[in-house]
Image (tube, rainbow, N blue to C red; front, side):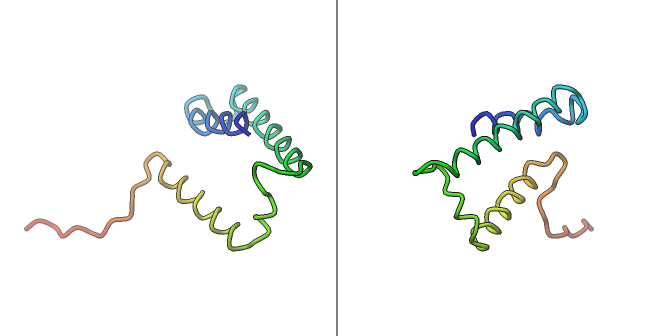
Length: 91
């Protein structure tokens, strides 16, 4: 899982600089996806998984996790501004 997350962070942080279709970004994204799939396969076969994937069967858990992820992405997006009330114009 650490490999997948580290490569995903690399892809998301350097994708704009290097280009989303550049070889390093595509290779890192591919390895990250394979590492994540290997993690899922392992977690579904062990007696005591590090992450209980059955939690995602609960809609409340799944949607709250997705909402938290979207909020985090929104906060980290370059150029994104927090919602603000309109300021009155100076007189």
